[in-house]
Length: 270
Ligand SMILES: [Zn+2]
Image 1 (cartoon, rainbow, N blue to C red):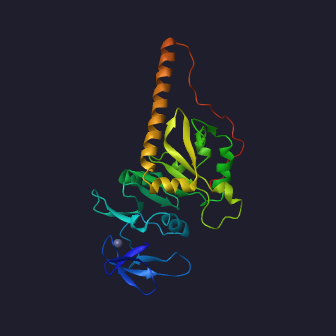
Image 2: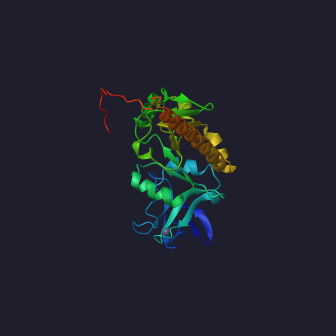
Image 3: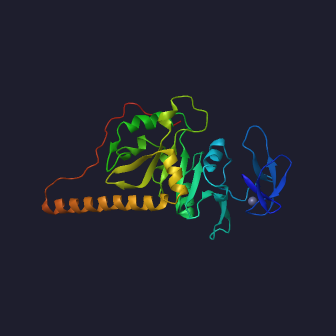
């Protein structure tokens, strides 16, 4: 954790300080070594939120884009009696979770069901192959509706499988934190995978980093996503109606997903 309570104030870890966890009110100690980012740790190995992952510089840099009072918000889980720490939660209730490690899709679903109004920001530099794979797939993006909005036919070639069936928007950040040496300009934009398909196409938007942060900070993110999703649902409704009409007419035009029959190279998993 970044913050713990010392004399009723939320403070960052400093060597030698003792503090109290704002979630479980148990004592925590400052960990200020050179390997990990400075943080508070519960005494013993158990942390009160078992969803918590050790933070990296990448996590901290992202959180720092938002006011400190929005960071590390403890939210009670009525079903289990536990509390979970939202990385960032805006006053309008949007939770942003920054995810560096791999997450099992079942676990991901549990968290999405808990936070509901949320967006994931995923570290796209965790595996070396993630960005080259994305770049290759990006050549096949089809721009639709407006600039920066794409329909993607084979989304499984684009992003890690664990995120493809997410029920909330997932933002991929390929910039990482200071460890990448190739041309950074192409890693600057964020790519948002929306939790909807238009026909068989996945929907992806390229979003400038600053624009995302600004839209979250100003409260515009939620209404914008909502209206964009409505727009896409409407396209699906019209598409369905058109398909039914054609089926009734027996015109025989069937909407098939194109299939690639041959894959010459089996890709390595890791
Ligand atoms: Zn605790």
